[in-house]
Length: 131
Image (cartoon, rainbow, N blue to C red; front, side, top):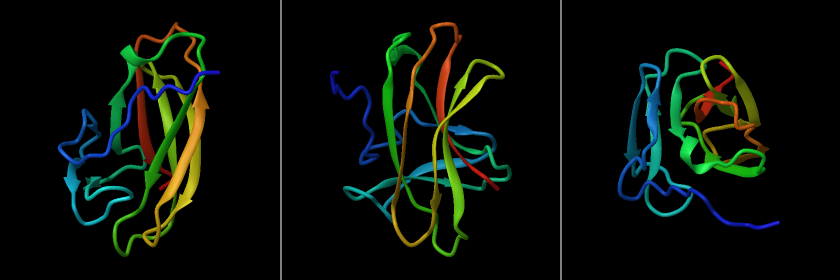
């Protein structure tokens, strides 16, 4: 098994191609950082699925298993919530990659594996909340 990193984002310069998922604002922030000096901040969420997403269609090959990992922390004074990393595989197909209880006190790593079938028109990895 090979351990080649396909994508890594530290948000030190910009949002690194992450996009808004739903009517939210995303930006880099110096308020908190797991590593370095910045992180990706999502604000103005209205629905559980609102957040940040990354189109990774061109980066994954069918039949190959990929390991995903993301460090998450809620904003100051936010209540602990279950955050999920999910793969959207076309218009109405979704696969949960991993989940964890995340708080505003410390960084939590959510990780898991995903194996694309090759039949999906596009692949969007995103972070969503339980509520």
